[in-house]
Length: 324
Image (cartoon, rainbow, N blue to C red; front, side):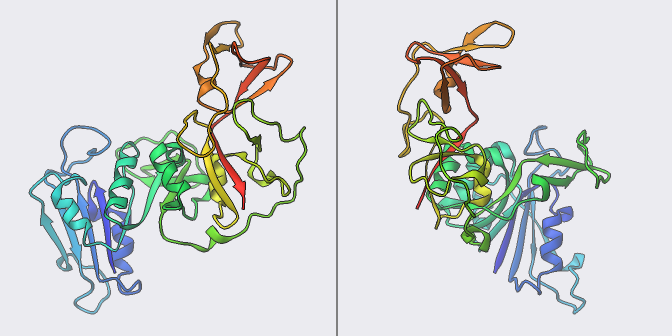
């Protein structure tokens, strides 16, 4: 098995490289490849001090000490800058059986698209908000990618001496940054993906109001999905942590788009946002999410529209699902 670790500032200090090289024989690996992006402008892709793009290639222990010694790791120059879209990087990628990396969040869509294009198995780190990108959501909906086992507390801890950490954590270390809402994204199957979510609640109209602009009911917590409702339900995006494709179908997302099976049933005309300080602003947000209609004015920010017979509350993005 060949493991590829891509787009790192310095692969020689990558913990991914450290883990796989020190467990090379235990994991039965054939080759380990990792690349380094050349330092150019200060951006998310190149905040490091490397002067030249290189890649490392490790083929296992040669002297019997089962430690990846320096002379056993091939350090090879790249002609280009190491960009994952370059022909050199793609050539290295094609050698891989599995890709393991932490791509820049700003390029997550493009990176996943490349892995899908080259039919690679992968385990990569991304932010949970990436599940709402239409390109990523479509892959999730079609069961081409899914979430892996999560980070403890829904937060990843990374070591980088160039960043100052303002977050709080009990296990702080020098140079540690704490990033909330990160997940493993993968197309490798895992047991938790086939574990049924235990349902115990029963449906009633009061607890599960119907949306005004989608033919679906609101389920505000994943563990409160009703056991006896067969229609479409809107659930928080954190539902994906418990998603079992043998138990549920994902049929859409409350983004206002018409490209999925579950589409908006209404487009609001002249929507207005009514703020708590009394100001009224553009209410286009009402057409990009699910809404609940109230006959009496609700607390906090609310919306109105020419074709809404009451007051609207706009909800966070929901994934639309059905029980099988």
